[in-house]
Length: 201
Image (cartoon, rainbow, N blue to C red; front, side, top):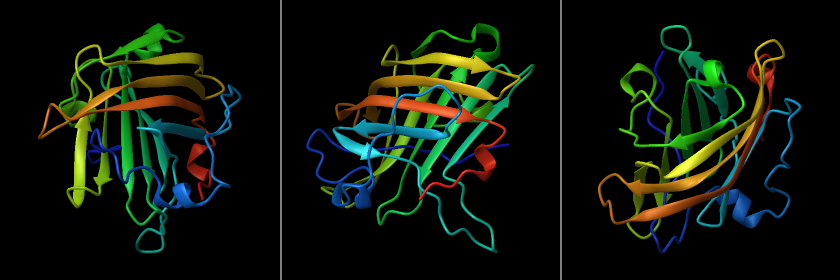
């Protein structure tokens, strides 16, 4: 199974990124850090909020804002695929965690991304994103690089389906490597069994 390239973006002069509606609506906020399978996700990209939001979909199906899945031989990697489908300028983020089933609760160093996912991605932990950049008037892809961040798993239980953690790091523009942005205060709390039925408004 393959998913499209994803995540958030912006330049060092970040004029418009993250969830458009979030910037205007004070009711939207970063979710608390929890470990009970609350099906939450959030982070800041250059101090602007990014949270999952479902889309209307096509052919009477919804676009799910967050997917958690595993792949490879013996489930040697897992991916958290997050989208904001509902803002005027959409955004997406992918985190690829290598060796989760073997290492469980641990800190995973974020290394280079090639902009792909699943079997087309690299065999280590990475992340990448796609976001709207107002100053150039289009979407840009930002990729992690060697030792550019951390994903810390604070809870992992195969039987309950719960995976929780925090993350932060730097990602750089695929076309302009000097353009680096920061991802901060990241957190997620997922129940893989109930996530497909979760609603993200």
